[in-house]
Image (cartoon, rainbow over all chains, first blue to last red; front, side):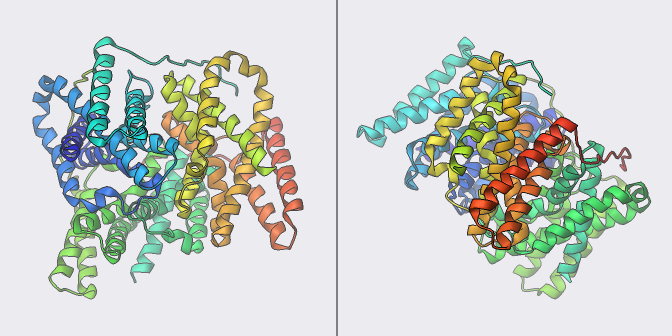
Length: 204
Length: 204
Length: 204
């Protein structure tokens, strides 16, 4: 079940990466790279930070074909995709929750301390988008926009908290998805944001 | 033989990195860093992704001196280098092939699946240039320009294909170099490009 | 003693990262990430490059709270911080020396060759700032500004040189701090710079 959601999510992330590449007029190869990095970059950074070798995607070469295929298909489908904007936002939110939970699971299984487990969840959830934005030469949108990383944090906290008090996966997982999806959707529809910090002074 | 080509290639890559640093008015230290990253960054990312520790260049400290020396020498030689533009393009193409083949060899020796082997070859071939461009604050040129990554892909495919059907190194290697060099040169002289994907719409 | 300086230094680095995030109008989450990356990113890159797992900060979750707390506190304190500019420059210089020495120690303990040990020191000293600038979408200031990386290099060379001739930690450490602080302060007050390399020609 989590795997199915994960596969849907990496396809959605790959397509969002491909659109970002198109906004920078990249060629087909650049589109494939950005699609790959957006979909699998979060898990890659997490695995590197945790020392979790071999990296997850290297053991599932089919994921490589899936995300690159999704990226290239986006080139053909691009003109129709904006009709699906809402669907994308839902899939992206699903992916954010799935990535966060999977990141926590990997770090938990390796015996890391709780704050590191939470960071592993958040890294998995947001680093794909951060790498996409760095490669597209812009300040990562996740550092500026509506609640996104905070949703990942809330999901990790709930998922780990429920497990800590003895609640099983079959309840903790749906609870995490319920919280994450509703929080993210509410943030989008209501325009919830974290306070922004603007600092003008230059010291040099 | 492959090692000799590799050494020539990292010098050429280091010098191209130094020129990119000069276009950003960096100081001597920045030049040394960008030279190092351009020449050895591809292998570094490959080793990290494959979990291939210790990293290759840490076992060959002489490479560090070589690429940093080449980068700093570029500052002195810069005004004469544009006469050598064609030579550079050939050396760069040689390097692309050598890096790609070496990347495949490392991943093969570690027992990775075929798609991962190809990706290791391409990562070695192109990530140095990607890191150079990210550190110089621009969209990586390899995602937008004439055939470059595609040459790496073709080289990896031919090299691995020949080995798969039982052809030995002494034929597979020259074949890979022959294909890679002629493809890259043809792409440069004819201006071959991959189709570009331009997407204007912003959804937010 | 070195640990105390290290803790002060990561707080100072986290605050400088938070101010950089404020210059890009990031939200509270972005501030926390940039603070974290600026303070602990150098050690992270060093650990990755050396294959030093688990990463240092994952074994000290209290560092995570410390740097994120310092980053968020900076939002509240920002308007008063420019009075402390000089203090910050001293703390930052302290941090540069502490990071460099610690980086050398980690690589030495793992048995790496001398040039790699020096690079580990410099990577620890400067990569936090490089990552901060890449995430804030600007050319890393350390590649362009007054003596900074050179100070790290001098500190590593002195520290390792003294140890090589049999001088103990209790002398090598203060000597490294003495040299590093005075060199950095002199560079700041006198405006010392490395020669800059400006290259205008584009070959394409």
